[in-house]
Length: 119
Image (cartoon, rainbow, N blue to C red; front, side, top):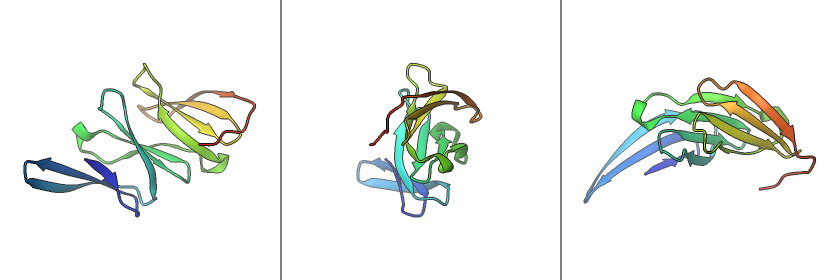
């Protein structure tokens, strides 16, 4: 079970029978608004309401890696780009949909929907 604390800490609870273990996985120092697993459960997107997106790979047990920071563009949401597992998409309130590489956070493409977007 993964969850985030108010302070931007990603926490993992390993529960087996009546025993559990708590592990702090990452501290991004920003409140996390959503956690999104990739379809194959190898990556976890950590999304903040300030518009920063981090990638965390549970199997690698490393730190969360900042993929993108859209704080200046009224960020609304992000998710994995399916069926490709190496990309994510983000959308701004102005309707701009952006595609990013999960490998290094490189901006790849964008399209403007021409409408305002709300969650």
